[in-house]
Amino acid sequence: MTEVKSREISAANGVAAGHVNRAPMRDTAAIIEDLKEALEFVEERMVNRSEVISQAFLALLIGEHLLIESRTGVGKTLLAEQVFRMFEGARTFKVQASKEQQPDTYFGGLLLEELKQGRIIHNTTGSLVESEFGFIDEIFDANDYTLRALLSLLNERQLVRGMQRMPSSIHTVVAATNYLRISEITEALMDRFMFKALIHPDKDAYHQFKISQQYLKNLGNTIEPIKKIQYADLAYASHIVRGEVPEYQISVTPDIVYFMNLVIRHYEIQRNRLLHDRPHETHLRTKDYYISPRTQAKSLDVVRAIAFLHGRTSVIKEDIPRLHLLLCTSGVAEERALFQRSYDTLIQLYQVSGAFEQLSALLTLDEVLTKLKHDPSLMSKPLDELEAAPTKRSLVTWAKETLGVADASAGHKRRLVEGYLQSIHPATEDLKALKVHMEKEIKVVFSEAAEHF
View 1 (cartoon, helix red, strand yellow):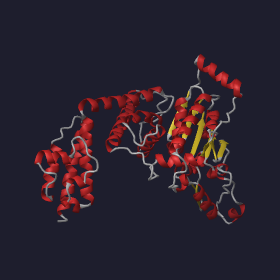
View 2 (cartoon, helix red, strand yellow):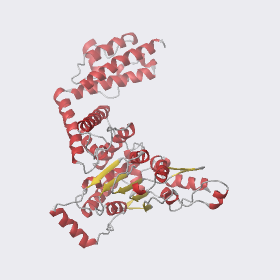
View 3 (cartoon, helix red, strand yellow):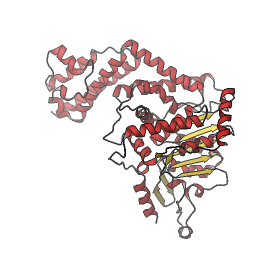
View 4 (spheres, helix red, strand yellow):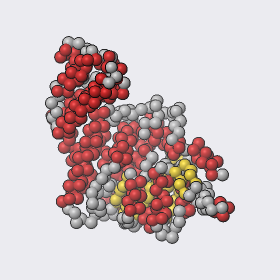
């Protein structure tokens, strides 16, 4: 029975099982327009909540989860339900957590016949396991035993209980809480929620007036949208922004990836300086601020999602500041301002100093060296066959200008790339460090190549 159910979920849910429908289900421009209209519809319903709504839609686009913290009565449940109501063809699981609950609240009741045989097997029908969307209210009221059981379900999209192993249909879970409970288990749980928001009660008179108007219209209930988005379209869009649809690729050039990582690192350093300078502030709950490699990798999905929503097939530098939606807690203005300063500081430095051209040149060289390292036989090939994308100061251009030839023999290639590297005078400390890496890589590549000839 468990194997049959597993196959059914795998076939029905490409996001969880990793299968991609290669044929476009509908025009992507129409999907983009529907998503933007849905976002605007929710923003109109939820007054002054644009930032957390943007987080919710980005979470949906990249297949991740959102954690919302606020005091009672701020509308966390209403927000989550309104977002999920914009879609059809998806199952939604809702629960209010409590300390008495056991994992079967989320995974389905235990099958008694299996339990008699000493096997823990859940009947997952109607559970979170078989739902595309989930809303967990007061998630930190759940006991640590139950929260631990949820970890693999949220992260790997897989139910792992006793002998039972089965893929889950989960696409996005929104969790709400009135407080944070810090423990080893809850810290691991929070890591599963890539997007985090802190909603403050709105005391602005105008915003309170607009909220009152919405209440008079709808009595605090969600609104049925005129048009809903098919869940299959959302799943397809999610595959696109994660780079899983070969016929619709959203490109991110190496220089943007490198620069984006520099901005993220700069922000991480600044956050930790803030923690060091003000260690006694209670809202700074951790000893240090850490951006995991998983979060850094997800940043690529987020900027591709932003480009997708703008109808572009390439990421631009101006998309990077929007990463505050992933890396900062929505509603904490200080964090967002700090991330914006990190971006502004680096973009100004790189634009004024011409560092972007140097970065492109160094990464072009890195790509050539990578190809030579993987296939030493390419040493005898012309350089213009190795270089993927020309730059203003490309390796091939430099060779022609300096040597008067498009290429050199395999024996001269090392001197050529070393000369090219020495012609670059880094304008920033980051580029100096990258140049040092290139010097080391040249030695490795040509030492290994010598062994093949």
